[in-house]
Length: 173
Image 1 (cartoon, rainbow, N blue to C red):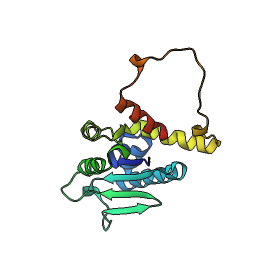
Image 2: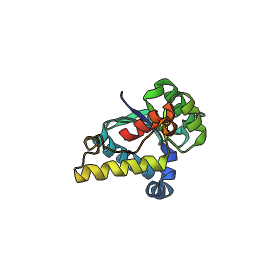
Image 3: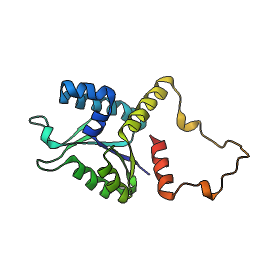
Image 4: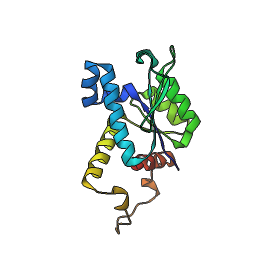
């Protein structure tokens, strides 16, 4: 199953310590830093990535949809919030979507559509870890396997089906 990561752009920028400093200097610097970080991540993981920004802060003469090195960029229309665009995309993608946002309105709406969610700070951690693992030459996915144990895990410790699916998608990051 292909994973489509849908990112609430300004939410991720403003939740991040490094990106928020750039955003305070100039909003365009924050966007560019985020896009550079996502392009580097895409080279490592190859997931489909879409970043959605509010169109009210769109750069002059910028298209509503653009693609930079495989990362799709969308700006909402005037009078439309990025939240609405994200919710529509997640409703269309359903189980294939992983939405990155710390906005509880988006998280609840998207989860009810069947998409998985991850908070912005946690996603930034996953990106940093992927870059670190790639730089060290460690392939985390091939390290797995069965570990023998005598510890019993019964049904009472089993997560719900939705939480298990969510965990599997987050492990792919």
